[in-house]
Image (cartoon, rainbow, N blue to C red; front, side, top):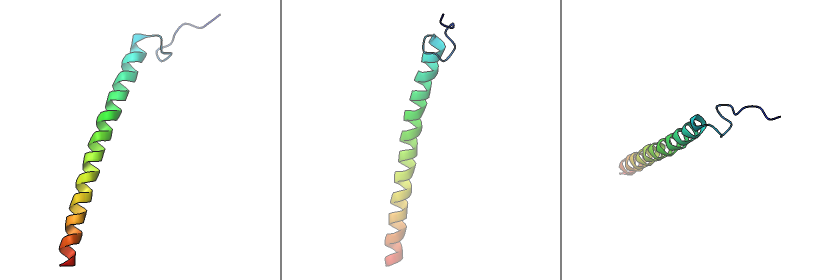
Length: 53
């Protein structure tokens, strides 16, 4: 006897929506974080260049 499918068993549409939105959020969050890190690295290099003169 198998138990009825729960909300996160992968059988219900709610689980698919939750998984898809989590995946999308991960991609968006990752790209935003990457942009911020790149901007920080650029400003840090500029500050270092100014400090050497």
